[in-house]
Amino acid sequence: MSRATYLLFLLSLLAFISAGIAHAEFYRWVDEAGTIHYSDNLPPAESQKKQDLLNERGRVVKSIPAPKTMGEIEEEKRLAQLELDKKKKIEQAKHRDRLLLALYLSVEDIELVRDERIETVESAIRITQLRRNKFTKKLAELASSEQRLKANGNDTPPWLLKSRKHYQEQLANVEDILAIKEKEKLVIKKRFARDINRYLELKEPELAAE
Image 1: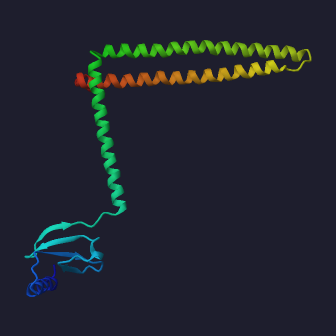
Image 2 (image 1 turned 180 degrees about the vertical axis):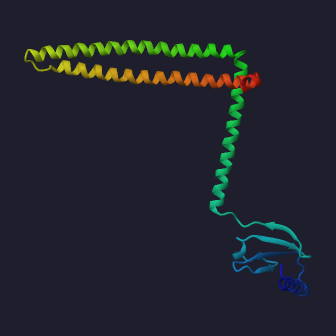
Image 3 (image 1 turned 180 degrees about the horizontal axis):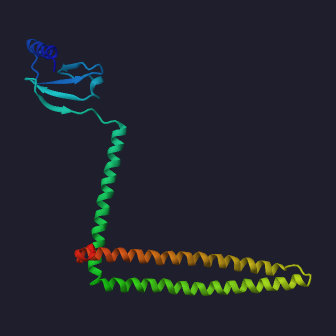
């Protein structure tokens, strides 16, 4: 605070006292031009600025920050949500750790469950491959029939066209299922690999480090 400003504050304070008005606290704020103001009443136009509440000795007893902008409020909400998501992930990780330790007594137990899951998927793959072979064979038979008909100068009958479309669609569905099952098998392997590593970290940290 400059000397001139401080003198101005003292003069204002003396003026209030000499007028017979007893005020225990005063506001101090800075306007857009950088000028410091003092008053026992805060003008409504200045309520959106940072203010200091001073006692009768000119000491700050409370600082009132300027109201937050919408941008600041939104940023606070975003950061709060990030912190909430972080805590949620930590709790979920702790829950998974507790389940891991409760469900398995050894790494061998985890590998056994993993192999059972993989075998279930591979069994579904084998069945689906049999269906693919069946549809492929049907399409080959239809193609052979169509060639014989054309060799005899006949057009392809509607029933053959309809059957060929049906088996082509079935074959496409089977290929999609096989692709999904292969991905599922990879997901199982990766998931159980993570479980084994985490189990070792929890039960035998020195082995996991190796």
